[in-house]
Length: 452
Image (cartoon, rainbow, N blue to C red; front, side):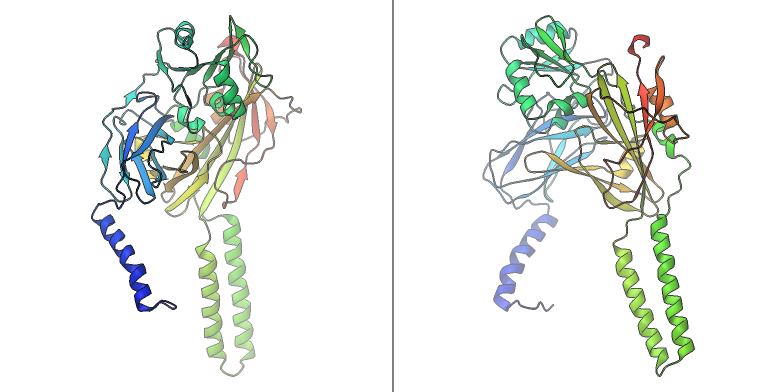
């Protein structure tokens, strides 16, 4: 093989390390000498379908930067770059979808899978997990507010280290004024509340003027009382796109027709004109057109996408759920940008989870940045992003039309006394940025907790 600009000695200096690294990878040996200590800040407890925190500590001599992957049956893989800084301890989110997740394994690069000694503990639907942090009396406050629950102390220095997504599995958080001020300053209260976490702050004064706090004794409580998310596996979510047949997007098909028309006109003109060597010119034009078409085709994404939102108004709170549906005409690996602590895929069952093989990419500090998954031919995936905010003043919504999300709202969101008050136009927030998406209108649900 000849490479322009490389001399013999320089080639050996480049290729030998690459060859050795590749050989070590195929042999299952990691070129890094460091190891990883994996621990669970919440002692391995988790609710299926909700992210849990995993702390990673590099021990031993630092090695070369390489990817570390966490996996378990019935769970989404998590991957991040590690190496270089021994003693660094990022906290990453790990999402177990069902009870098959009993133990996590990790691997560095192409190295062997190493099981984590500490097991995982799946929580029953009626069990609640509460974390507390702050001064010495917070454990008593947590037990008072949430009796007969699993109450766990959090780290005193950084109680909610890493992304807020990692703590999604908590049902409630009991903290003092100092911890609440830090979370508010770092703008982490919003994603925690979006996960449905009830936040209790022991303080004599209101923690802030942004969120609708309710005073209970010597504490202030923020309870979003959000509508429950779909079940861990929920086939009802896919009724919206039951009749959806995957195919190449209309814009793609239109451009292919334009290509064909232009080529046909050029070829016809050349044949009618019959210049000297016109057959050779026709062959050259055909090759040029096919090359251009192939190059353009390489960058086309055979994914169709639809987005729609459901806004639930309940008391002083507003909950926004954005749904994105994707399908593909051919098997493809795709990804979406990370936008919120509660961004996740909703599957119909364990088989679909295993087929789509979702993978969460995190930065070196543990913050998520991309969610990747495999879409088989004619396969469909549903993505959900949830956020909460103080109740806004809305313009008068339009009457509800025949939106594809109507059936989803009736089955999952509407309870006794709840009403569907109208719809508003929206713009998509999640989904693949390089895919043209069809947008469904936002449906407005008025929640009546008194009748629940």
